Amino acid sequence: MSEITIFLLYLLAGVAFGCTRLPRFAALHNAFLVVAFLVLAIGLSLHGQLLYESVLVGGRFDLSTAHIASMIGLELALIAMIAAIEPTLRGISAGMLLLAAFTALVTFAGDSSTSSTPMIWQIRAHILTSLLSYGLLTVGAIVAVYAMVQERRLHARRLSAVNNLFAPLETTERLLFSIAAAGFAGLALAILTGLTFVDNLFAQHLAHKTVLSILALIVFGALLAGRTIAGWRGKRAIKLYLGGFLLLCVAYFGTRLVLEQLNRSWS
Image (tube, rainbow, N blue to C red):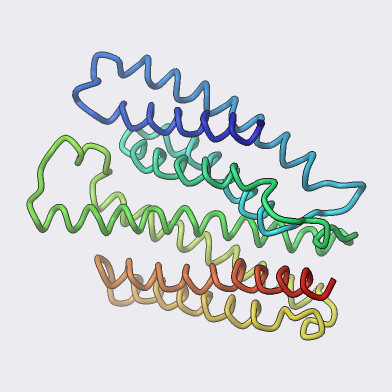
């Protein structure tokens, strides 16, 4: 029941943040804002406690795909709360919370018994760095989708109250490249610590994940270089970012899902 409660709290917070951006609810702006921050704080507390109890099992890290997705959802919710301090970003925060709500539902999905392993602190640091960078780049993917939708609406001259859910396009693009830069640095550190601390990389079937992560790093690096040197923006930048993020999704979740299915079949 805990994950359902978290789902509902995140959903309510997201709707409330969205309502603060709509003119029709201007009279209730402060009330929606208080409700949004309050229920989100409760949801974050419950989500953190739930993950602490389910991931840390007898001094081990239980890192099933479901737990990783839920941990990234917790990070999304936390970033959404921080972003919502800026009024123009509350529409984006609502989108983050919608995704975070669904990740909370999968916390106990699947069989995680094969994923619980003892780890030295270096490996734990590598894993946490990887999750933090992936969560940050996931936020960037949401921002990129917002920017894409916003650009299409502007070109189609669709002007309505829904436009208030979006920050100004220039603000959205600046936010996207700031996230890309921070995510690039985190991903580079995660890859470096993985290559340094993980023994028998190929024997553990992690080669594909490493190669795909490096390819994603190259894509994000090209995006940042293009922005700095040639001033890339708009559709080109958005598509390149989403392409890098897709590579990262396959690296993190595609590889892990395949390995978990193989472990089940072998056992």
